[in-house]
Length: 158
Image (cartoon, rainbow, N blue to C red; front, side, top):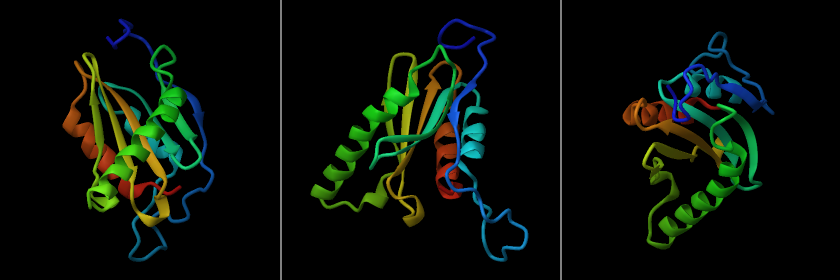
């Protein structure tokens, strides 16, 4: 049962596309790690137990690059616009107090029934991008979700 009391609520694609496809599938690219596109990354994230939705967002333009979630769940595009301000504020604050932005791993907002996780990506190729994930508190595994976000951040090719 999900947070909205529905047993059969499938996750559906609201909008998923990749502006730039992966150019390396691991074969024929010696010494390089295969990179994941937006749609593949989102599919992997929503496959985790307890995930209610996930999105990938450009926090410079506030553009949602892709989102997948339960239609009855949170409005991922509205959350992305609001979370853009959270990411900008946190990165700015860290800079003000002398921390390098790449030191941030994730931002976790704890609600009574869910966790909202925000992972700013700091690799040069992905600067300005964050991954957002909504995790049901009762059925999700917070540490597994954080690990999946770490992996997504390392492999995402935007």
